[in-house]
Image 1 (cartoon, helix red, strand yellow):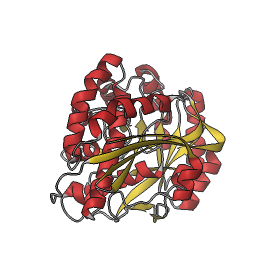
Image 2 (image 1 turned 90 degrees about the vertical axis):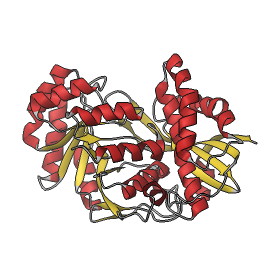
Image 3 (image 1 turned 135 degrees about the horizontal axis):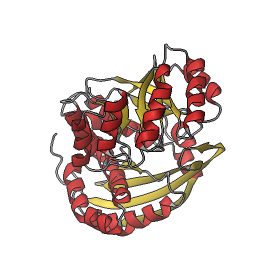
Length: 384
């Protein structure tokens, strides 16, 4: 990476954007009633980078995040040199994670740090006139596209949503389960009937089951040729997931609720996880996801970033995919989401079942000013 000299933060701005949706989305643990984005902007040397910090749950998450960003992160960031996102992440984790442990909330700390990290890689790319993926890899990225699967299918309207995914050209679909074995089997059967067997089918239980229940479920759905079973076990413990894989032979995916490289490594080394799924807006931004992808390359584990937010988080995940051949899949929620569809100037491009990786500076996307203003609900900032 070419040295640019110091990049001193002049401004940190945190903005809440919200968009209503026509139909709420049922998960096994809760219901999503609107689309929300907590956008992080960091300005240094007249250049602004943007990032996303995850606030889907709970419904009041943005209140905590504003406090954490403005009162916790801001004083550590404004006036500091951010020319190395890796160094900044190290400093932020050293300062904030001990507080998070005492608070009993390491996740929100990582999520706040993630938004900063994404914004810094966007900022650094813009300052260097290079994509974030190029900067991660240290050279021109080799990967121009990455296969994508359609998520957000089920538990209702399964056939219609599968038809939408097929019409858009996706070669894989993920359905939501975790509603009891009888209903889960019915959801999967309906999806397989709509898709046929030429399309990969993934299922996501959102940690709904104990080990015995998950074992029984695996037996019940084996006939449907499941590509992976995601987060089947409550608590998501690595040893329980390894045991489930050994009992059933089911391909297991997890990672959206894992924090810290050491914990990710325990999943990668377990032998029971075949797909690891860091969420860049939750578990450490591009810096940590890139490290996870590098470590995964020496294992039998593929990488499939978890994406269930805005176009900003998806663009960041695509940059990691461009820098790492271990990234095998990208997630694209196909339900209504103005924060994905309308927030950036150029829509994310799907061709032959794969997403094109943006090649512009930083994340390679530009926010659409009118949409940003229209959907903004609240904003706070700190200046040097």
